[in-house]
Length: 219
Image (tube, rainbow, N blue to C red; front, side):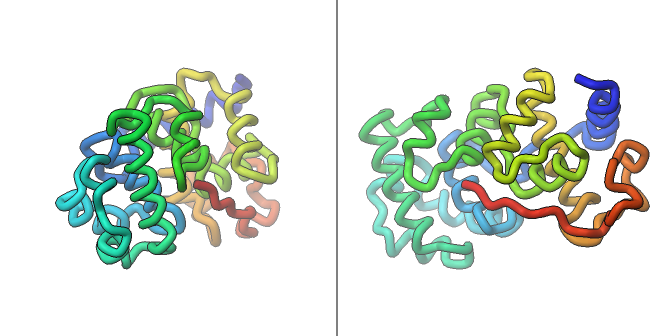
């Protein structure tokens, strides 16, 4: 790890000491569902939807018995709700069939579930099971590219580069730091460079600082 990377990590840690996922959940299953819903939907919107969803279907066993139409009605104000409802039901069914209704703490087993991509699986194993993981969402992708930490064209490639660059012990926390910084300061358009704590470390300063870096969508 270079001195510059170390300084950036230290600055982010100091700025966001309490950074955690902003999705609300009580169980690994609830985090899995919330993260599946968060694709092309804000965490704030998901947190408005999940209380009514979990009131009726709090676990895999109950959701596996749900009608797709009932799930659609409960998540209707979430983007792509038709597809997400089908994936939620089928995922719940497979959790019951293969894992006794429990969410597996294994990346490959999670990614075998409908609607669960690498980003979603990494979020779950990091936040529900405490494993070291870097989930690359649009904020992590954008900020890491602006910092010069990655130059891959997709989320998977960016994850590999970050895993090579950063100490494993900080993977999960760095994921949250980058998300919080991306939401609050290093926004997609017109980033707030004038107040950025990373101003002196950012290679973009003075070079098209307001030009959006490509966004990424991943599950």
